[in-house]
Image 1 (cartoon, rainbow, N blue to C red):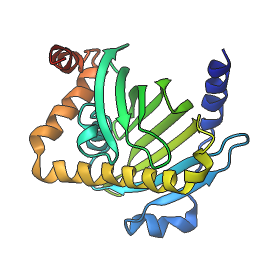
Image 2 (spheres, rainbow, N blue to C red):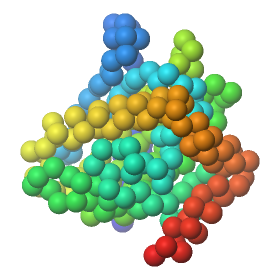
Image 3 (cartoon, rainbow, N blue to C red):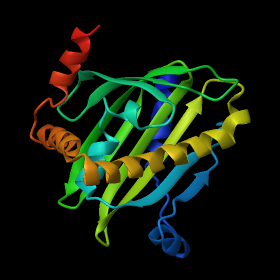
Length: 227
């Protein structure tokens, strides 16, 4: 019950998203990541907002960001990412293993993710914790919208870790998050340029989900049969 109430509070606070500041737009347009941090009362880690441009469409950017079984191949420190269950055509549970910095041990957790099409040129995603060895609560969201022929990705996350040592690695956590979001940009642009078959696979998964098709079911069954 305590964890449920904490998650509800985190979901409420993450609704109020930071907006990119006018003075930061030139840096954004030059290719830099824009980072804002919000301190959270009673939490060792801040809420994080990251903005970056991706040279791809909003659909392509979302497709790679939510390429659930492929995330382990390009996200730093993610050792395993295994879709395990469809809750709805767009909501999927995924098991993860992540390598954490010393003195923390590897984290095993299950997250739910969901997405929607806001308009023809904008998509959004959200995720939240189902189970975790290292966190009490996790919430996040991302928006992908057309901006001067590219995609403006806005990423927001809030993690409440369990470890008493978490405050010691706050700086590392922020740097790792920036690196992971940069990896989304790099991989999206890579597949757009040189791995179009892979890109089409994950675009189809997004479009099928929006049509009411359990688009990860075949992958889930295939991964289950290998156990």
